[in-house]
Length: 263
Image (cartoon, rainbow, N blue to C red; front, top):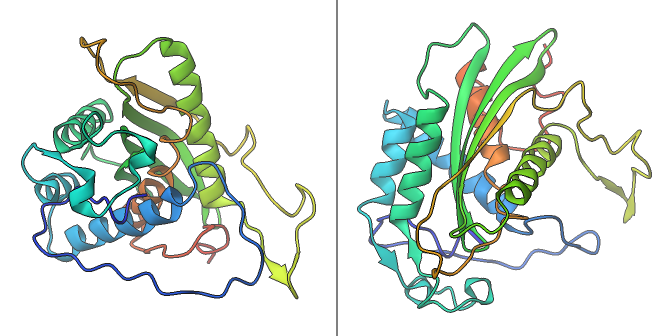
């Protein structure tokens, strides 16, 4: 889910998954483990790009490397979301395309106002390819607002484009909500939050002001279909936090963001 099946052209990668004792029973959330994995990987790529003084987009594309189709099994991904590795290889060309498309639509690199910034992230999940550019503006005493999100999805052939659009829009709202506000903490194994006064979600006044969904066109309707319900979620949090860094110079390494920018 974005850790084993990384698309990067890196010749030697070592992954370790040590056991960790949970303090409560773990359940599933929309997009499952893709969310923390995308947050870690895509935030780190942005941090590396900044460290070497490179544009994030160009650094990301270079890291992905040339267009190629990767057999998931060569990446030790025996699951591949339950789909055939022959029908659903990891296609870096499709990932390249969503990055190029969304950065073009969002006018990546444009001059931003003071305390504003753009952030980029991409992720492959549920056999679909998604890239997003999130704009943030920091107002008042460190409040994060989201004036605009551009998000491109390549899910293969589309049967009902408006259904895809609504699913991806919902993922953007849910992703912003999760990144900025939503948290469950525990005391002696019991959740501290028991309603929406404690477990905050984005409302109309603090959700994304504009969401632009860009569905990648296809001409091959014999090709296999990808998912649309969950792939929009994973890149939102890292793109948002990368935008916060562009706006403030502060790197966010733990979620939710709330209270971390207060002066």
